[in-house]
Image 1 (cartoon, rainbow, N blue to C red):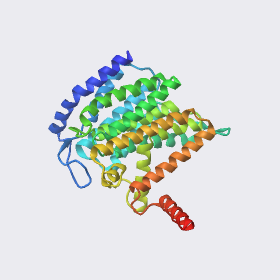
Image 2 (tube, one colour):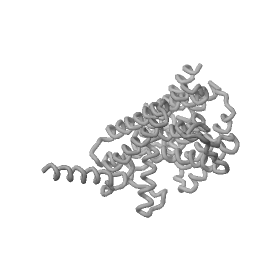
Image 3 (tube, rainbow, N blue to C red):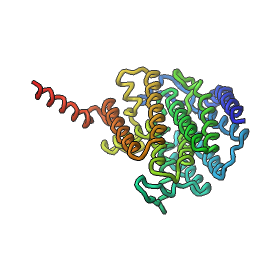
Image 4 (cartoon, helix red, strand yellow):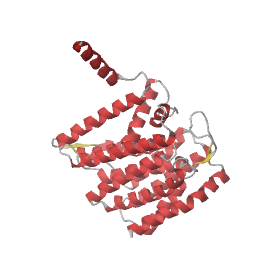
Length: 354
């Protein structure tokens, strides 16, 4: 039944996306080019609605049972309405944030989905207490925005989200969490159908309707799959979403250092930096796909490692992220602390040899 549902979702997405494209032009949900954007012509940006409709078709067909399901579906509807309003009227950032907070609050308060505690690696528990609610909401809103921020090139957000969904669903299979497997694969099939039109050169964008929905459902599924477990497992969704999380992290740092509002747009995200380095649109997207797949593989290896190996792996991943950030200029061309240290060591070694 699951396999049939996935086929239905995939083809519903493929069949309905051209209709959504026509609807977007009809109601004015279009994206006009400007100095911050890569595309050169007016594009329909309501594609996320096709993903959501396909997702709902799959949920109605399969009806995966879970106590959290009603609250999750209501939260999805709220986030879709928020995205629709933004694609139509370009909402101010504060109103988008309110919609995200309401959607996250629905899952937390009505669905009672909270990260209550984690088991520490060397014994004992870290109880979050009254902080469990804000921590859970912060995670949902943070990942929702992380996926939204990376949606800057044809097929980028859809592809990165698909890789994250594959990893989350695969690890849920290992854990025997059938609900996360079912929902994750339904979203995946719906997204892949849309990606048929969204990969470069795209004929339609997912818009905030799609980016917010994918970020929201991925954040919730990762909580369902890895909440209230060990510290090691708690880090797994962070690794799986390494690309959008690290891009968002450096974006926040840039804005703080440059004394700009956190909601201020710029052209220094990961994909912008890679384009400036000379990579083509398609090459940039494929390279970021490879990065996302690498993080997914690391998450799987990490989940099977012992405490010492897992902590070592975290350190290596953090080091790699910092080196890549310096190499491509995520914090600016002059931000190269580690690379400068390496260069100094090379220079000193060369002098000593001479």
